[in-house]
Length: 449
Ligand SMILES: C[S@@+](CC[C@H](N)C(=O)[O-])C[C@H]1O[C@@H](n2cnc3c(N)ncnc32)[C@H](O)[C@@H]1O
Image 1 (cartoon, protein in one colour):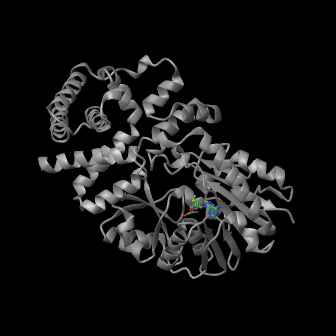
Image 2 (cartoon, rainbow, N blue to C red):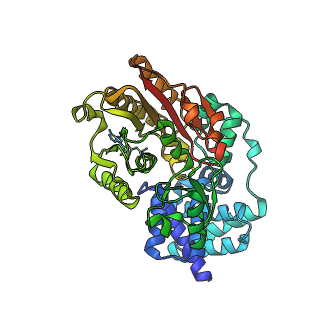
Image 3 (cartoon, rainbow, N blue to C red):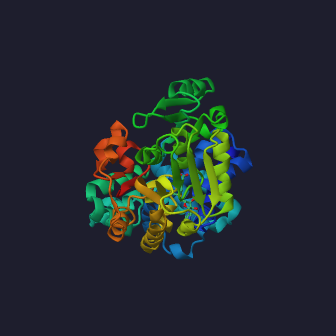
């Protein structure tokens, strides 16, 4: 058992190094490691906790370590990761005694380094055990303190404070430190939610009905992606906030819908399910390998009414005639600031200047699809970010350039009951703390008749 544990810590260390070198997103790398090493369930739990926990709290852990390290720049990165993963256990995990965490860290230091490193690691960790970590109260500036306390970059905390105020920013930063919910969307074209819950229960999963979205279930135990219900097309893994895009679009049978940024097809398949196999959803994405994912999902769910193709939607006018779609969804590429809980490494890699660059692409996409909508039709613009520049300001810029469009005040009527209080006119901003789902933005626009 001790040998196993040690392996888990070493693996966590490898993952933290790879993530820092930007080799892949943390969630992809972790899943790949779990599959490759065929880890038992208890090790998966600990590995996930150590890797995500240390990543989530990275800035706080640096702050805690700083008084104990004389020349941090001279210390090899793997040693810093080792110290951080150990301080994480000492501060945040009750179930692991400090002496056990320190002992294992020293063993790893001996194995990967040499006696000198092991002795330094031992000295630093023993001092922390004796003296305790420094208090965050010492940081006078509230924005800076919140940034370090919740491990979010200071530019982002300041930006959010200016957009949402201090209290909402604090709530958002704090919820970003917690584990995300896994939710599934029941394919109502095939099974009722109640029956799907029974099927999942029988398989040994523990799920409950979502109080927010009528066709959603929340997983309390087990990864729904490995369920038979998923493989048989009764279920799609999708965040509850994302499900709101199809509600906003409000499709009816036999309509022709464009999903301009569709891969891997979460929203296209939802729209196609809502049309009960009738009409047509044209699903575009940039690259063939991404379009393949849409096709796989459509096949798994038995949805013949999806036509997926590789196309840069900025050139969609060369492929489709004006006024050819009843409804259009633009689920735009965005900074993803609403899904940081799922990809904690994003907190440290995103730069403020990325937001402006994305804004330009979002505008180009909106401009190129605008002529393709029929008069009276609905255009839904959505993102998984909470940033006002990418959301409200993108939409306002579009409306200024396109007098043929107007805000759609009827959005609220199409939303599930629980979400309605969050709708303001033609817009909806879900923050992660509202329902525990991802941060997500929706604007609904109508093409004037
Ligand atoms: C937010 S994701 C879409 C998620 C998808 N709607 C779903 O629910 O599964 C944005 C997608 O836009 C695609 N994309 C980015 N630029 C594009 C462009 N110019 N034309 C078409 N697709 C684009 C990306 O490849 C990415 O798959």
